[in-house]
Every structure is written in C-alpha cells, then in structure tokens.
Image 1 (cartoon, rainbow, N blue to C red):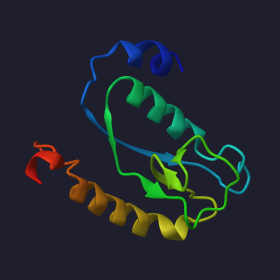
Image 2: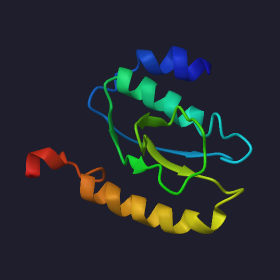
Image 3: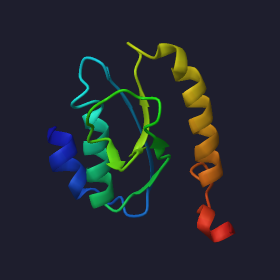
Image 4: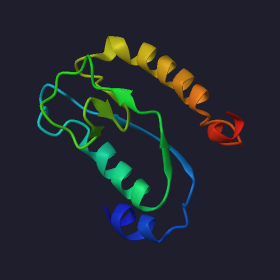
Length: 114
C-alpha cells in the first residue's frame, strides 16, 4: 500500500503504457473480486498513464469489483484460478492478441498509425 499510494503518485508516468491483470476468487469474494486491480487502475490513471486491455465482465460471477471501471468492463484481465482455471489460458491468449491490436507492444501509439 505504501508504494501504491505514496511512491507511485510521485513518479513521472505521463503517457506510459500500462496493462493490468488480477487474480481473485469470484465465488468466495464476490463483493470485492479483484479490487486491487481497480485500485491500481485508479492510481495509474491519476499518474497520467494510458491503460490498455479492457475486457468484458461477461462470463464472470461476481457482485461487485473495483476492477469494473466501466459498466461491463474490467480495467484489464481478471483470472479466477479457484473457479475458472480452465478458462485462464484461452483468456490470456485472447488478451495478448487484444493488446497487440491496441498497440500496447508497439513503440508508436496505435492512434498515430491510424
């Protein structure tokens, strides 16, 4: 917490690319599934970062999450190795492809090449 709330805000991260993932148990902790990912998102946005890799909440069984930063969208990819371990590999592969399409791995922002 010290790093997240005291160190990160004082770092020069303007326009840096960020992709967030989280791990949690959506069945046992459905009221705050992957909340830490949402807290990271808030801090990175406040620091001026560009967040890539938003994913749909479809297929997840949670009540609430700070990682759900837009209605129906997580701030990145969330994994549940306790209840949906069989979906993790395919979700990760699709997310990496999505990040490539969004220009996360390129040196030039995707907007500049469009």
